[in-house]
Each structure stands twice: as C-alpha cells, then as structure tokens.
Image (tube, rainbow, N blue to C red; front, top):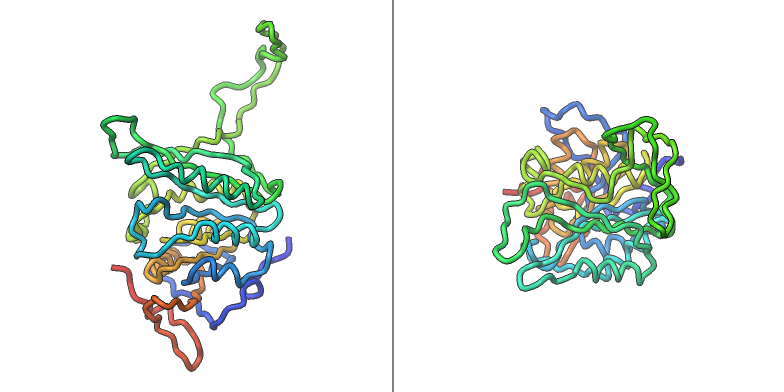
Length: 318
C-alpha cells in the first residue's frame, strides 16, 4: 500500500509544528502522523480533493442536548462533504442518538436516510449499548443505547471481522435445510471456536470505561475508546487515513494513531482542539496543529513572521 503523506493531501495555510509530548508519556510509539485542525469542518473539507478518506468515525452533536460553545451543526453540508471526500469503498461510522423527552425526535433516522439519498449505502445499522446508565425514566424503559450507522461509499473495501469465543465447539449434529413443514433436519457439522460478533456492541461509560484519560472529560460528550477502536479495526487497515470532523477530545485520533493509522481531526472549537492536543501529547502521539480562522474565533497565538502556530502557547482548557 502506498504510504500516505498528510502534507501532500492537505494544502496547509500555515507551517505547523508538532505538539510537544509530556515528559511522563507512556511507551506508546506511533509511526503515523495526526493533524488537528481548528475550523469549520465543512470549509476545511471543501478545500480537500475527492476520495481521500478511508474511514470516518465520529459522534456529532444532535438535538442540542449538549452545549458546544454555541456553534451550529449544518448536518446536510457536512454529509455532502463527507460523501465527496470518502474514497470508493470507504466507510463513515455515524454514532448518534435522539432526544427522548417529549417523544423521540428520530433525528438519527432522518440523518441516515439523507446519507442514503446522497449516495451512501446503509451497510449496517449497529447499536451502541451503554452498560451503566444512571438515567432512569418514570414512564418508559431506561434509555441505554445510541445508533451507529455504518454508511459505505459502494461496497466496503475492508471488513476485518471481530471475533468472540463460542460457548461450545467441536463436531455436533446441526440443524440444516429447514423447510416450510417445520421439520428439523440434522447432519454432522463443526462448531467453530470463534464466531463473528453481533452488531450490538456494549461498553461501560464514565471514567475507566469510556477512557482513563481524565482530560477527555473536559469535553461534554465523550464516547468510549473501545468503540472507536473496534470500528477502526473493522473498517480500515494499517496506513489508512481516518477522519473525525467533530473530533472533540480526540478519542478517534488516539485509537487511530495507536493502531498504525493516519488521522485528521477537525473541531470548530479551539478549546476542544487543545484538549485533544494535550491528550495525544501526554501519550507521546505525534500530532500537528493547523488553524483555519473563523470570524467569531478568539485569535490563536501565531508568529506572523513565520506563520507558525505555537502549540505550547494555545489557551488551556479549564
């Protein structure tokens, strides 16, 4: 596979410098490069060439359930650009839920239908089940899941099936060829030691479940590292380019870089990008910073003489 070069793929308006690693960084080594971009993801993606992203794993804001610094969420524009920049056979994993108070909004399904309308195939509809949720409801069952829409641009070029052990294996009489008469017919067959997981994936949430990185919880909505990892392993290969256009605290980036993938993360909030930068730097993961100016942004500390973003002087998240 041809090696990717992020500098070749992205025409940067500024020279960028690597984020400094913390002295106490764990022994995690990555030969791949990550790039964090402060900017409107629609505008950033519009500057890219077609068909360059192998996998997108993201969890967008939905139904205004969280405060994301007052930024808007132009879903259709984001979806249109994701389709254009996704490579043939590439996949977008869209992790999303619905407002439930006052009746379910069904926003997630409307978004999935729009993805279909612009050309994506709904390759799978998966469930992200939360093992531990404290939100009890008085007149309905506890809401403990979100949707994971796996949208592909054509047939997925990669599927590395994740396996789990079977409870029993070996040779047994197995039911086969059951006809409308309902009579079971059996023949000798082999039960394998492993089987492919179902499309309902369960994860613990909160500190220690979602992640052990305390800095990540400075963002209002963090999804589990294991969720991002499982999708990255399933739908991409080493060396592939992974995108999170609303990267928040950098969970997708962490798992991509730790597993030999290239990564681009975009967020409109400079504060969230700094959380992601610090989190990745603490782990010794190589990442560069790029800033796309926005009219309502607070200016970042840029040395105009060299047009270099100084990662060490970015404002820290409180």
